Length: 501
Image (cartoon, rainbow, N blue to C red; front, side, top):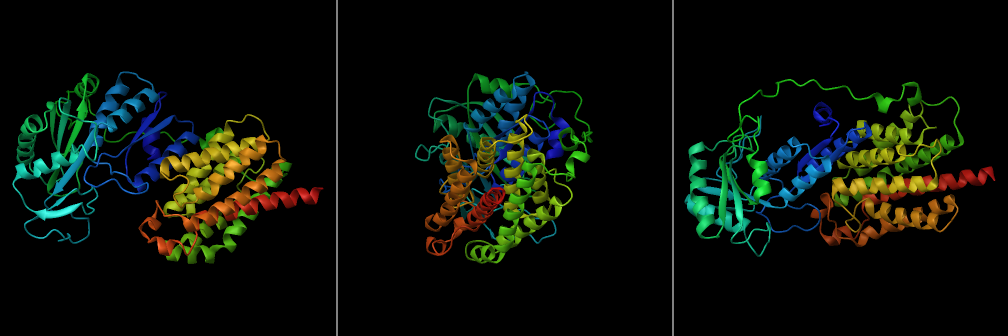
């Protein structure tokens, strides 16, 4: 993803249009933060156009489906007119809010190297499936195409569920998308049934119809229908000429080459290799940073078994082991590679260490956390980072994790430790407290926040599938880990100042 950003991004910036799946959001989020740290301008728009499932609890939300293709076309046409990155992102976001999609499968896709699942059985179809072959909302008997199309259209346009802001009298665009093994003739039959139903039953003016295989699921037989509310601005973008080879009514012209040269990333934002090694002599700030990092990672290493035990009850049981791998890598890399006298670069290198060895969601989240803090700290032109600048970096990191992961306070995640810590830190610093005392008080808030997760219903991650009775027996492992390293760093800084006194 980062290579793609480097390959295509010019001075105007890059817009990432991401389908609303946790893995997509996190990985593209990490790519965005890495690209930003290299100096690229990047914005992100999340598309969740699925209309098959009822509104879900928590942060999972509606999946991204074929309606994303229409958003891509609109954003591309907007960019081609020379609009700014913010303006293109705004058009894409508006378009994403105007479209709804639902899919129907007659067969399950074949995953490479695996036997095709027979979960549907003969004479059955699946309604509301996702693009990765995951089960849909319901399995039903095969029905005539007009009946299936009628059900899909009523689902998308349901006034009760209010998936899309479309009402009788509106103009719309229809996209009929093949899922990989559906002949063009059958897609045309679906479109032929959908248009009169939209006109006569729903009172809509169908201004454009696009039919083809735009977003497929390998060899799955089936289709999806997307309906987008249209106006002159949207139609102008959809009608704009394009060299995309499979866009209907595409124009002639040179296609992009099969291989695109990708520029090498700037080496650590232009820093020399010497500046990204451990300094011969540590400054006062560098020494404090080393003390805090050592204390934080040692706290995580000591907590490994407890974290695994807690995670074994509410997750997959490896939170402690995953965090331990990150902690040991940080400790080892700090001996040679961290430019401790440069706080911003050091925080960025911590993120690189985590990214290299920590798998799963935790690794991505902490890498995003560190890269966002690094970017915020780099905005400071002074060599010494003030306590308020550290507080602002923490706030920026929390905002980045929340943006790409979707969680916020009360969702039973690590943010339930870090958000109260950030609030208390800002409050005490603004009140004029000694920074060391403010750090310590904020660490107490982190611990209290982590403990409070025992009383929260999970709305993110694997814990969201666990019953409240089981969740009440343990705190959230991620929150406890965050509180642990944060508290250890605060105590280490306090002890260091006491020694000097």
